[in-house]
Length: 94
Length: 485
Image (cartoon, rainbow over all chains, first blue to last red; front, side, top):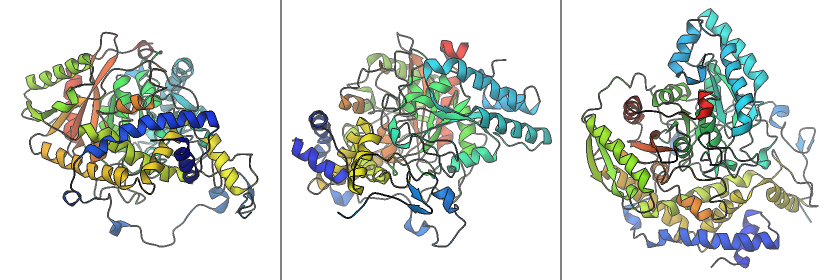
């Protein structure tokens, strides 16, 4: 059951917000989406038969070495609020 | 001359023989975009000045004999593929003004060959959708009927190719986002094997499923473009090692090829007209000497749920980076970092993106993880095993690309689950990491294109492209009015 309380909890985790009307609509839509997702519960699978596999081999990670990279001005060109080579944000501590 | 009707090989011939210059070719497509795209809205950004400068440079290379396969040939890119200095929006307010400081591997590969970038194609926001309706920049229209969607999420790419606004475009496919719009717009789209094309510089949606691939007028053009973008710059650890170009794959024989028809893809929920058209295509292959084999993919009934759980879980993680700190939209509202962060995401993301983030967060959250995300990953392995069993009996699989032809704009907007269910024919290919090509196989009673998908074994793009090419050569392609004018 997807209710407003669950939407509030998920919004807190996902850093999202909705006004009351949007929240109501989102809860109703999520209810039918979750009902569709419940299909997976019907599948009978033995975990031992299907150990999860991950793409790529961790051995292929790039070596941890210094390589030429973007100059700071280019790397920071998209920062919304910048002071010199620093990123400015609102206060983090209350 | 109707350059927009030409194949890559024909354009290459014309350029190399100085029958046309790269600048003239580029002007031809830019003029078409200017004239036709106000109807279709397939481009978010058109790079007129840059394209003409690139064309000039390409012509200088051609004149000197320094010619690569893509030198002087114009292309477009879906707007989630990074282009240095050209905005890459993902059709989202969040990235409306984002100018990447680097090129994606595929962009760099094309530039190195002297290709001309015409512009960036519209898409569903962050590639989440099957209609292009979720784009912040407005819906793209289907060139066969502008009251209908072009499909998605690479809807702008498919519509642009279909209307003759570019010879080809690169799209991305996470659950069908190249094949479904290709089917709706009557063009050919290839989703390569996971690991065939570097994802470096592709804005991440679901990293274990995403793959870049070509949308073009034919299987031959898809193969041509795939070879042009197959390049390992060491930036994507999931890229396969020692990849070879496809080369000449079209001279081989298709007689004796075993084509599997999985019954589940022709059952309930698939439009009878689509079913009939795809079955006729199967018969055509039989006439060409292929063997038709009945196969089964029993877990298809769980595929939509498994796909949406995995994709949304990965999306909720990938999209956590949009916090308004380093790049992208930042809200003017809020007094603390936390408040600004929440307002930023509230203002920057559209409804579908928010729904997917919520679903992914739900599937990964404590108390639900085992029942949803973990179960979906187990299903992923089961589906891979079922495909492996199928490929013991046949060489390729033939299915409809979509359960029905292109739907009306706004038809499924209010019910997200209806939109999700429409992905049933495409998502298992991404779940299993396989290659698949969609090509038109007929037209319905409204004159709308119907696409069929040929699914191959991992890294066997050659076989599916060869089969698609043979079909294309023996079937009539009905072009839309935009392409013809």
